[in-house]
Length: 98
Image: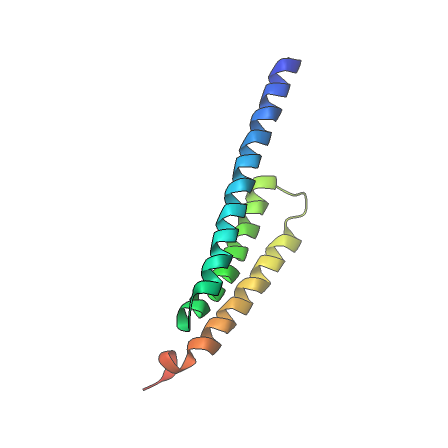
């Protein structure tokens, strides 16, 4: 029984380590691409980072199943609303021009 528990724990740690490594590589690559981008493309990266943060928080809620998920959901909701406001502000001319 103890071996089965240790096996499950080591498998979970390996999965988490791979996931963390993938996130770090993705984030580092994204940061480099953000600073290499010019003009409007950099604005799209900025918007992507905000929505990606919301997705990461939602994934974290699903993955870790905290006892009190509401604060995390409220943080994700706040960031999402902020990003919608950023999108409207950044692209209001294209959205509302006639």
